[in-house]
Amino acid sequence: MAGGNFLHRVISYVVNEVVVNGLANSPAFQRFAVRTSKRIEDLSIKAAQTKRELTEQVKDLSRNFEANSPTKGSPEGASGNGDESDQSQHTADQGKSVRGGPVSWLSFLLLVATGAGLIFYYDREKKRHIEEINTSSNAVKQGPSAGKAAIGGSFNLINHNGNAVTDRDFLGNWTVVYFGFTHCPDICPDELQKLADAVDKIKEKAGIEIVPVFISVDPERDTVEQVREYVKEFHPNLVGLTGNPDEIKKAARAFRVYYMKTEEEGSDYLVDHSIIMYLMDPNMDFLKFFGKNYDVDALTDGIIQEIKQYKKIKA
Image: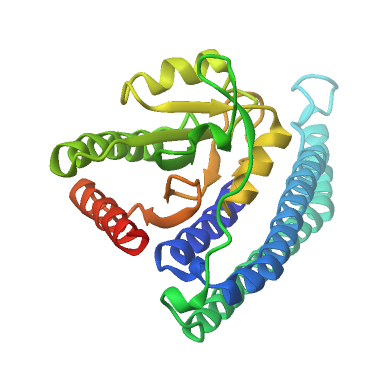
């Protein structure tokens, strides 16, 4: 399980660093990201398949090894030559151990070596893609002349009151969008609380009303009722959105959000995802993103600055 989670964390880290460093503002990076994300997804699928195969092989080897392990000798007194019989049985069992044990251990060691090699390969592939992303980003010109980021788009979801909602319902508002899931143990609650505090501070400092929006990336567990109970813990104006898996995927792709469910069985699983807040203007066009590295004050000041700059340009 650790190998799969490690790969998920690597992908999530890469996506977060790319967005936090401002690379997604570039059309050149957007074209590069489409090619790269597909390759990373393929590698993740291969890694998950390999992990399952290795797990099954380890189980098979374990069963074979137990079957070939030495058995206890015959009970004493079973015959007139009990001592000789026990010694003979013990010797025979030792012979079985010599024949069966080394083969199983050798197979196990070869399996471990193969698994380590595969993990090294996938890790190296991830690092290579990270280097490609960094190289591409260094060549991209930053600033307004680089073009408008292809982030945001239409979506059709359900809010925490059970009503159908689209992106057009947020027109005319300054909106901050965050993707997460209600069973998130720490990061999502921390980020949503930070957003809630920033919303209040922005209103106090600049008189600007912000509509905070939470979009679930875990539609299997995040029902309307679950989301409703969740969002009310943070801010009375926080809008919670969920929906069917296809619509969630569509919304996530529109915002260039990465998410992937871990492989725990049953309902006890986590979801790796991008940790980004998206500031959208009154036309629901993307303005700026804010990563986990922003504290409440930096987030507050950053949003106010972007809105003032927007109004200055539009004036």
